[in-house]
Structure formats: structure tokens, C-alpha cells
Length: 301
Image (tube, rainbow, N blue to C red; front, side, top):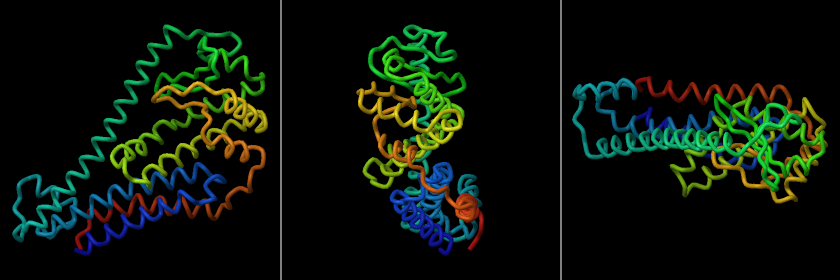
């Protein structure tokens, strides 16, 4: 009973932490640290929520959650008899765990299929341009710039964007898209998109996805600033925002008008860096969340 109550309290704490994180002001000062915290909160919340239900369900085994689940799967009888509440908790816990796993796998498979189809399409309609080596160019009048993530990643830009941007602005945009590819931001977004699909009614899940989407854009902006002027990247974002940029294809990561002004303000007037003590403290909290929840699955209380 203590394990179930502890896991339930941890799940509630993770939910409250996620809600508070959606309104936190420090995240723009350290987007990569904030992404790590979001990921750890998501993992801890999922394991704690399902673990709380399963911990209550397997109380008759008088073992840890993981050991009890192994015993249950092997057909070993519990030390005490089942009652309807324990059976209901077992069904609910297994169903919740199955939903989380299935939606994550489904989201991953759909993203892979969308990217595979888009690569085939690019092979037919895109071209190479010596002016932008290593980048695929679309003959489309609208402004577009995006990347196709994966093992065979590609950066794509439209003819409209080439005409819209100056040379320095183009360099900034391409550096931003290369950062998405290098840091595999598609994998960062995947579990949050899956959680949104599993809980379409949840405002926290919706806000979490939106916040992580903004944070990976800021993280890519930070990496791009190593190779270009922040002001050039800011003006490029403004040009895309006012030119009516072409929507980014499904499953890709690209420049769009959403949250442009927040990113532009950050590039032009960057705030102070998050103190080292705060960074290390947030990382320590993230590690504690990720390690504590599986530990609670194994102990017997």
C-alpha cells in the first residue's frame, strides 16, 4: 500500500511540475536543460501513474511491483486472495501501460512512413543547387525551409525562400535546420506527440507538446548562432513570418510562423544565462526523477 501511495504522490507531483513548467520563465534561458526536465517529467509521470495502479493491484503477492508482475505473468498464485478492487486496478494499470506503449509505437511508425514517402517525393521534384551544396531545392514560389530527420536526413529549401532571403539570412536558416538534424529533435518531440494522442483532452499534454516544440526551436537557434549573426537569423524569421511561409510537411521540422516573435525577441535581446548552480540542480532533479520511479517498481514496502 505504501508503494502505491508513493507512486501516486509522485505522479501527482510530476503532473503539478509539468503544469508549473508550462509557465516558467527560465526555460528560454536554458532550452536544452528545460527539454531534459520535460523528458524526465514525462517518463516519471508515465511510470508512476501506471505503477501506482499496478502496485495496488499486486498487493496480494507481497512483493515489489516488478517482481509481482513477473510472478503474475508466470502464473504463480498470490499469497493472499484477489478481490474485485485489485482485479480492477490490474486491468486499469495494464490498459494504461498498453495505451502509452501503443501510441508511442504508432506515432513512431507513422513518422517513419511520412518521411519515407517524402524522400521519394523529393527524389522526383527536388533538385540540387551548387549555390547551396548539400541542400535539396524545391521549385515552389512560397517560402519554405525544413529538414527531413532520420538516418538519411535532408535539409530542404524552396525557390521562394532563396529569393526571399539574403545570403547571410539563408546561412542562418540552413544552420538552424542543420541543428535540428544534428540534435535529433524529432526524437525529442515524438513521446510528447504520442502523449497528446493518448490524452487528447488533457490541457497539460497539449501545453507540454507546445512548450517542447518552442524549446527545440530555441535550442536550434542557439546552435545556429555559433555560425551566423543572431540578428540575421531574427530577420530571416521575420521574413518567413510575414511572407506566408508554406506549411511544413507532416513528420518534418521546419520554419513556421508560430512563436516567431518570442524567438526574435530572444535573439535580439538575449537574457542572462541560467546560473550554473541552477543548471546542475535541474539536471540532478531530472536524474532523480528518472531513477527513482523504476526503483519504486522494485522495492517491497
